[in-house]
Image (spheres, rainbow, N blue to C red):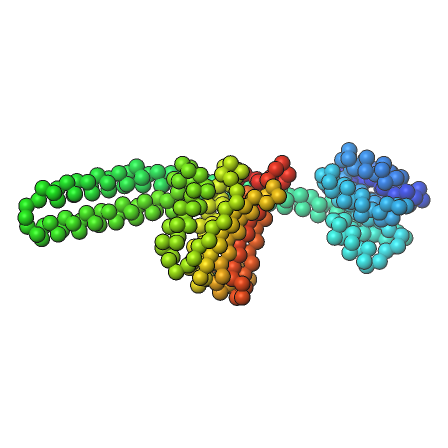
Length: 362
Ligand SMILES: Nc1ncnc2c1ncn2[C@@H]1O[C@H](COP(=O)(O)OP(=O)(O)OP(=O)(O)O)[C@@H](O)[C@H]1O
Ligand SMILES: [Mg+2]
């Protein structure tokens, strides 16, 4: 611990200041510098300057409560821990203090100098650990966002590679086969073989196109998200002809930030594929709309639903649900999955637009 711990006592009782002062002076291994703010306002002013390592806050200060002070301090990005001091302690007050984010809670007249000294030390240390944890979490978030972006870039690159190399070779070979077939002699067996070859080539071309658009639908870049969603629904409907797809898009292309488009598309892709693979639904509904400055995406089915807890415990199960949540939350959305046997499954993501909190761009 550093040489001197800077303590601020926010308390309207001078007597308390003298008692705390004496207690801190008694400490043998740690040196303290105590300042005193005798009013709520003076306390806030001192917190704003962020010049202390810990705040000792009187729980009841006239008409104001230490809890109010703690809440306001939180909005000022107060990093130092707060320890409440109170003359009238009870369990309910203790709980409230803890929930509000206080580091400790001491009842006046019931603590000694060593207890105060230890409480201060522990509070500072646990606040420091909390800060470090928060920083690690933020780093992890940024890392995950970078990873997702790298994954999208890589998919785009592979799709382009397939298009430029395999795609064009396949077209050339098919063209040549068809050309040769036209100049063949009458041997029906050879003709038949060429027709089969041509069909196989056409199939390979379709497959490579499908893989390319799974990797990155070029339509997203060329025509935008709305056209891509409409195209995806048509394709989906063709493949899963037993499921009715209902699309309801109530937003303009220009109202969707560029960075969100691929995220929205990936969520739709996964949620609809899940509906087809697992739900036994007769109908899947997709809604994308702008509601009160928020983009709301909801994909729901009328299928058999599933137990979300059981699905998340099965570590063998897929990545789809997790990656939808990650993509949504990393881009600043709230994400929710509701599922029941009676009502099927609904996946919802909601991005609040505007300066606060705004979509965080991965
Ligand atoms: N719409 C749905 N209806 C019924 N069950 C679902 C639905 N969506 C997901 N599930 C259940 O949740 C599980 C996990 O879904 P998730 O998308 O994470 O994995 P997956 O689809 O099995 O594999 P992956 O997405 O990696 O290809 C599924 O195996 C399925 O049991
Ligand atoms: Mg899945």
